[in-house]
Image 1: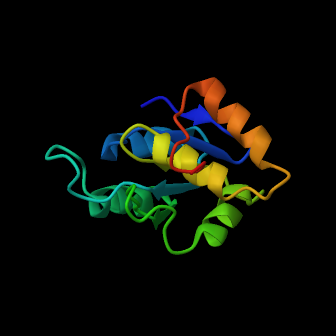
Image 2 (image 1 turned 180 degrees about the horizontal axis):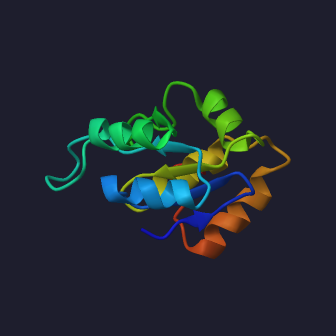
Length: 132
């Protein structure tokens, strides 16, 4: 698990494990957002287990699973507000980090989209979901 920094308040990564939660807490993250539905892969940790580890570490856990079929989900504005909250340091995860980066780009206002696209593409994320 190697987080990619998208902004001062948001980093994204591929799938995390229960053991990663303590490390993320030590790194200063205060919120973990899951953008991956349970059951995408048989060996994938369940959201309940990640959430329990977050609660034990004193971190907030947010469930916001999306797929290409229901992107961008039910509350993109609220998710964007969380991504930008200066009082939080957020790690969003999915299978590879791509969905998370797409959600970040999609949650940007018109003036910020171009910069978000540049940051995400420079890391190597495919932004096909956010830019359709």
